[in-house]
Each structure stands twice: as structure tokens, then as C-alpha cells.
Length: 165
Image (cartoon, rainbow, N blue to C red; front, side):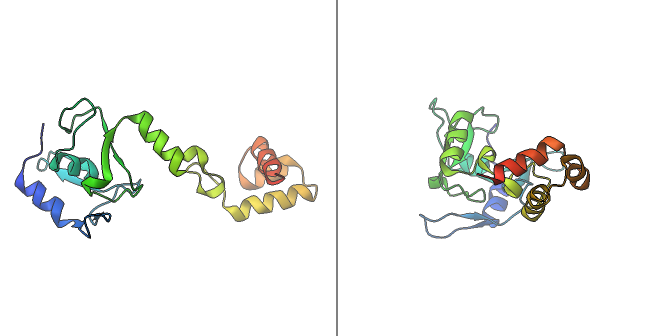
């Protein structure tokens, strides 16, 4: 299914801040929990689509298999600029999950590279990690520290030994 509804396309453009053709075109509408733009289409019973996917359809980006990008496509719309709000078609390309992970590793934005409080699963702030290291250096036992911060003893141990590097 292609999105050719003029009202959706008009709404799309009303939520895009177009700068120079070489710059990012920032999405100014709703953002999802991961920071990507989202727009609803199809009326009250419709669904939402990420803004950069809609941009790929509007601008008829081509998939590696030479088909036009469609909403049901197995392909991903990836950002060359690493800006999740960008909908500039010159900053977008069609790829697969493997190329998405490769790009994230090169740009150092993949979650596996994030440490401490920047990791999406982190329960502790950087200050709390420093406190844990200080407690351990002063001889406080693992169980007491783990109970204080509601984490496992192995987590306390990893925090302490990783701080020694």
C-alpha cells in the first residue's frame, strides 16, 4: 500500500522544518519513545508510521531489490546522518537490520557500546556507581551494597572491578 492521501502528505510537510537541502530536515511533530517522528494515517482506525519511513515513500526511495519502498516493506529506512528526527530523503537510505547494526556500531550509537547510566537498561546513576566503588574500597560487603541499591551482588562486583580498569 502506498500512502497517496494528500491530507497525510500535507500534514507531513506541516511538521517538517526544511533547512538547506544538505542539512537535516527536522521532524517537529510527535516523537515516539525512541526519539523518532510519528504520524498517524488512515483516519480514526488507522495506524501510525515513523516519519522517516513516510518520507521514504513520499520521495519514492528505492529498495536494494529495486522496488519502491512501501509501508509493508521488510526493508528498514536508515539515517546516514544518525539524526532520528531527520526526514531529508538525501540523508535516508533503504537497508536491512544487518546494515542498521553496522551503522550503529560505526557511529557508536548501538546500545551494546553504551556504559553506565547511558545504557538503556541502567538502574543506577553515575553518582551511585561511584558510591558503590567507594563503599567496596572501604570494605563494605557485597550483600549490604547490593541490598542498599536493589541490585545483585554480581552487579556490585562488576561495577567495582570495571572501575579498576
